[in-house]
Length: 261
Length: 321
Image 1 (cartoon, each protein chain N blue to C red):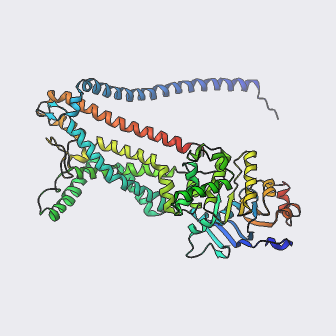
Image 2: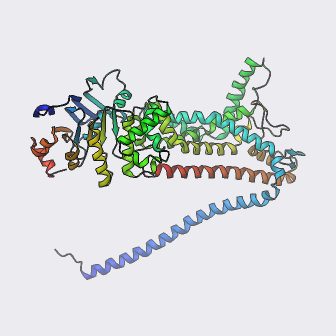
Image 3: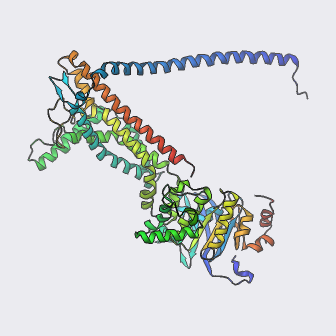
């Protein structure tokens, strides 16, 4: 199920997933999933609640193993490097594959220190370097103009949409190659959502973005590729325009036409 | 099929309902009276204690009482050495006990497997530790710290001279540290549990190691809870007598404690001494009341501080993210 079969010139696959299966205890949550995520494009994962799309997303940067009883089988390669396997440090994986969560989760620190956190724990100590990187990340996340005069104020004082953009800036500051987003706009109002979607479009020029969304219009608006998950199974994966106009599978068609979900 | 009941049935039902309502009202009233009476007993006892202590103790409290040593066989003077002794003992106790308690809680909550038998056994042990009578801790302190550890130090470092092999402030503080460990462990674990999972995930997703996440995000977020536990431990430590009875508290000392091997005076032990060992009970009574009042004020203040800190923590962590 590679997406390059439709004739359009493709950037090479950034993430290659083969036979990925996630278990919670004895119960299989999702898989086996095989797909290629194309570099510097946006890939959306859609499907009804409980279909396994978030679980799949979290297995791409090894966040699932923080959940007791969770087990992952199969293979994920980032630019050819396996991310699962003996001797591979999940910390190193997460530095290359960043993540933004459904609920904005800023640290109870200042705006600046939120963005600087990943840099400091990564060993960057030079304050001028940190200040530059913080500004760059906040600019990329389209938040700089709104917060540049109050970088030392608490991040908890920002609005919901600003907090989520701060979380994006925080993830971008450590310069990951891939950005995973788990329903990043589901808790936001329409204006803040529009901001985030615009931002995702801009980010895809530089980053590989994988986004989980409940909202099919959102997938259609932001994603170049879309994967449809249903009952723990990857049903269909294709270019977004193809998937939404000429789905191969009747379940995909039922879902995108609103017959269930 | 009819939906409405016959008129006779309805009248019967109304009669039954009325009777049940009457019966419920009586039961409600009786329960309110009974529970209210129980509450009244508690309030009255508390009020009697407080009134008695304040009425008899307050007139005797003065600057001199707080800053002078006892004189004339405890029938005059103040309790300054006892206050100093308690502060020193509590500081030592905190330095020794809180780091161990906090570290234990961090291990239990962050590193140990939640389903492992060992973890569960340790949790049960901690809970049981909290239920051990304090006199048992006192005997443990005497046996382990004074007679084993202290005597051992003397043998090795002081050629058998009695320096540490006798009751001393350090042994009393260590005994009290053991006694208050469960308070610190339970409070710290509770605080760690209250740290939102989202914050841990945010840190880990940025490529932080577990260690970095625990020390940069989790512990700072839990610091108010850890502080609450520490204050409660201090408050407990300030009031206990039994653990220091055999391990370091002195009846009367002309000098303040100067080293870790000194004995010390403490208000709680002073109360015990004044009430049981005084040569002239009537003469010491005002001093006894005043000492009790000081001790009560101290522990109330500490407990109140713990409540304030906890309320602040709730507000911070409970605020919408």
